[in-house]
Amino acid sequence: MASSILSDCSSCATSRLPPLRRARHPPPPRFRPSPAPAPSLTRPLSASPAPLPLLPRARRMAALSAAAASSADPATVLADASAKIIDGKLVAKQIRDEVGVEIARMKEATGVVPGLAVILVGSRKDSQTYVRNKKKACEAVGIKSYEVNLPEDCSEYEVIKNIATFNEDPSVHGILVQLPLPRHMNDENILNAVSIEKDVDGFHPLNIGRLAMQGRDPFFVPCTPKGCMELLHRYGFEIKGKRAVVIGRSNIVGMPAALLLQKANATVSIVHSQTKNPEEITRQADIIIAAVGVANLVRGSWIKPGAAIIDVGINPVDDPSSPRGYRLVGDVCYEEASKVAGVITPVPGGVGPMTIAMLLSNTLESAKRIHNFK
Image (spheres, rainbow, N blue to C red):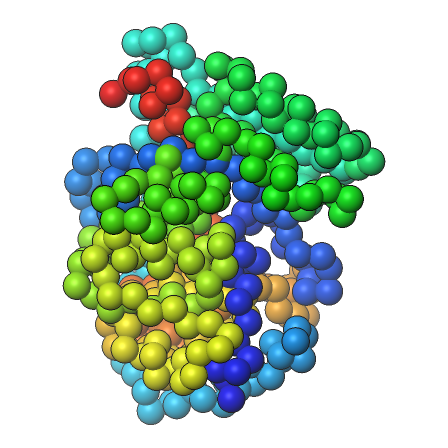
């Protein structure tokens, strides 16, 4: 039964979007940095922007994909319907432009330039590429980048010492420790060393706790879930009073996404590895956020007509016709879902570009808060 083998792998989807590799390779690295109260958890970054034009492991995953495929009922796929596309690239560009304008305004008024520090341990090619892309994104909007590269065999103490230096540096407003770290290091010890006021990825336990509490706001909202919510807001999709289903319960995407939907007054269910009848539960949703890391898991028969689908998954599947030998697909079967849903994010080009855009936004918000700039 599909419910008994559902995998909770939402962190592998787009939480950091480094260059993707085949499934047999190690999972892509992820950034985990800090927290800063978001100005509003349920509103877009700018005031009322006009809505955009609606444009146990391998065996379990194989069994789940087969079960999901067999559950697809062609009768539920409406051949004459077509979902509107949510263009994540367009929204991410709009946000980057807004961030750039605010940074220029802040610099002119106060002389302060937001700063983002990255600590990279080791020489993994994918991690280096990811850090390089972050640096380019920062430069494009006017954020100053700081980078520390440490050898693979450095001590945990040395990493924490560099974090402490950035914690005390007033020119640094956000700190990222590139993951994965070498095996001899304790991730929790290192990530907890980042100041909560500079943890711009929003995964500090105090941030998540504040996100979960009524009447409290975290310093920072985790970047990928924040990007999912921003897409819904920017396309004018009403969340209040709607039924929402989050597929996947990772600390990086699924769990914070569910908390954000709840704060926006949706009625939220989470589908995970022990959920019975996931198709039936998902079919009731007005909003679906899929972040489980299983290619084409959610079929057209799982979807309520007119639902909004945010697909966080990024999964490489074999494709001999592609120059790379593979192509990227989401957790949602796009061909089927797009005939039933009202709006849907493509893969690639949907949630992925939003993650970096939200990191830039969080870094700006951190600088504005630290310097009391409105």
